[in-house]
Length: 452
Image 1 (cartoon, rainbow, N blue to C red):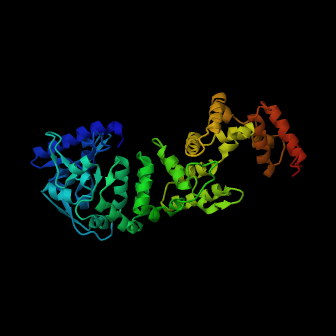
Image 2: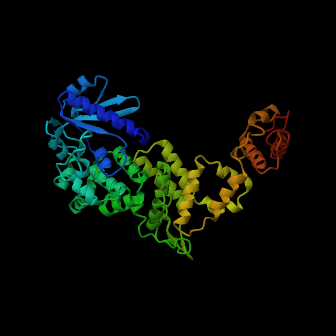
Image 3: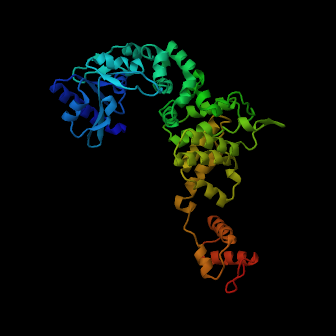
């Protein structure tokens, strides 16, 4: 749910609680929304926990969706807002490292709190009185800015292996530390993350990269051993030296962390592009007269594609990340590009993401923004419609003039567009004359003769 809808969601949650209490049930706000409210942040969504059983919930809220029948969870909607309402429960045995085989519905909110993952996520709040129910020391850990597993940390992580990544995500986003026993349990249990589906891992990595503290998230993934299990290709950047005249900041890992630190509310594609833009460097490192990474862009695209396919990212995200990596070294050539080449470059889809990646790349290395400023100035000079003007001629025009279609059509039309972008031609007649001369010179077909 978007933040701009959160106040309405809070009112919906309050009304749900009031309805439940009028019907004789206990009910509270629970989980992340309580944590965020106590930290002075606006929650993204609101959850309610109650002693009402699932059938009672459906009776009280007949239009609710029973989204987790096995676990006593319903979704109450009102307009664009929605609130998840769940029956107090304790969990039965976990067998698959993901979810319990069953649950026991409870009347005691304390039982519900003790089956949760981390202490700061197990607080309950009465929105009317403001009373906070704390059965696991969550308020103490909020004050101490600690992520602490409830109960025995190894047990918590054996139950649901994804909690390994969630601990890192919360610590990064909230700027908290991970309590020592919890940290050690993550480090010991890191290999268990291999048993989690690619989609669930992908979603946690995506949040780590886009929720506001990607550098801290990557550092924690590395420190806990999770990076080795999930993204060994990124781990391999550590210790890969770079030429100091271009990269005084240090190795590829340090450079990448510095770039991640500069991200501000990035799209997922930009965050991934930043993380992976130099992923080809470890495999292309060599020392000639200086350190070189010949072919690192091409190898980087290939490695990034493998990573994103492995983690089941969407085709749209994969395509943009590959484009960001493939083009990130082209900025060094922009001052000497032909006008047509530069304009084609500047009209790449989501070009502002290419610009931001380049800006971060520069600031995390040599510090010069000369190429960035050059393109910005060019953007001021060239209106967007001039980057891709309507074509002066098409293949149909050539056919109508009597030329036989063939491979040269594409080449000639591209050359005509180059001339148009560079201002050497501006009319259909000029374009046809240029195209005809080229086709005839190549013997690709004369009007009325049909040569091929």
